[in-house]
Length: 239
Image (cartoon, rainbow, N blue to C red):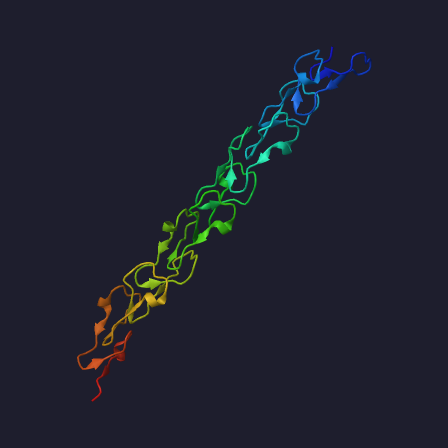
């Protein structure tokens, strides 16, 4: 009788009539008479060995899966696509989970959530399953973020009142102060033009001013141009 892991091949053949079950299969019983008696490795598993006598099929590792039975190569385990990961071993179907918002992964076959990389500081992504750093959008002008892994534009911090920034993707508070003679009562200013000039006849020496109240009137016998930043900009009326 043929041993476990083998089956009877040709009736009447005297020399080596028993053949090994193929890779990806096994056979625990003795005396098998047909190749069909060899049992396929289950889905999510594979084996490269010939003539296996028990279910020693190897699990597809985390980050991979296989829906077919009888797999005979490790490459039969399919990789999770970029932007996804799976912690499951011996997975029979695609259990791959998308990297969360604020993260991305360009690699295939990720096996843990930590394989998903955080969007850099100054960027964010509200979408899940990103597979490239280019999927991380810049914080808009007038905002910044020192944190990594931002999942929404709301995680970008607005420049304070009295300041502005024209830069995209700022990773720290590099907001520029409105110059003397101007003020900005709102947050998130993205242009210098959003700094409002003090009216004619007034001046302000304060930088990063947040209110029109910082604009002081010139003495009664003097006037000044729009956006004056010093008292000396107030000059006497002619005549």
